[in-house]
Image 1 (cartoon, helix red, strand yellow):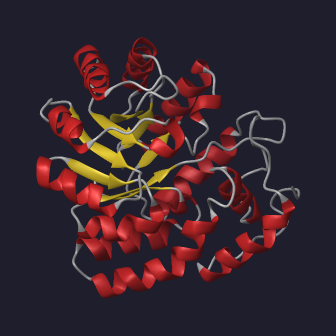
Image 2: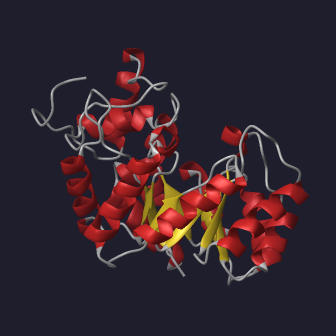
Length: 300
């Protein structure tokens, strides 16, 4: 089972929006050195919806080749179309991904029966482990615990990224599905509480900027050292919250640029972080022990 701190990796871009392959390579190596336990590529934090199909395939392939089996690489392949999701999931398998993270269909608001049929169709069509992704704040679609329980009976559906921020939801899914079905928090601020209720880790935004601390927090929690986990989590809490002061990944990309890890690029319709929030993010970085670097990239 994939456990611990899994980073929902950003896609580094130049100011003109082109993907920065050098920064991507350096980010991956940095995360491996910082003990990140898995990569999610082309998810919402990675601006997957803004990448072309060719770009998505290239980024997944490049990261798979670079990681070379050291940790799992999971590809975000979900769309609002069942057939298009199947196509992208097949591409992810061809690229060598270890699993697919598939968000609930957005905009078209399927029923619970429709959600079951959607995921079953994908599972039947592509022999690749699937992690469900529930984030109703973005999709206007909530996959309920009873539907998750039904889907967990399908052999290739191995877990769920539960991003409602409702800890009781994690407890309900764990009670229904047991230890063999992996639950990942998709909300950094409640990840520790979710691990208390049976989650085996977090698919994290914060881990982009503080990978070693997120790894240490998850390790402590999974090993039962809740005092240490709480201490680390409190240091990270301002970052957990302020990274959503504007839509993800706007604040995160600004922080990573301040750290000297990526250029300033982000794709429309997203824009760079509004200057009114710069001080808030700097304070959160300080709380987490993150020191901005100088002269690595030009200023935003």
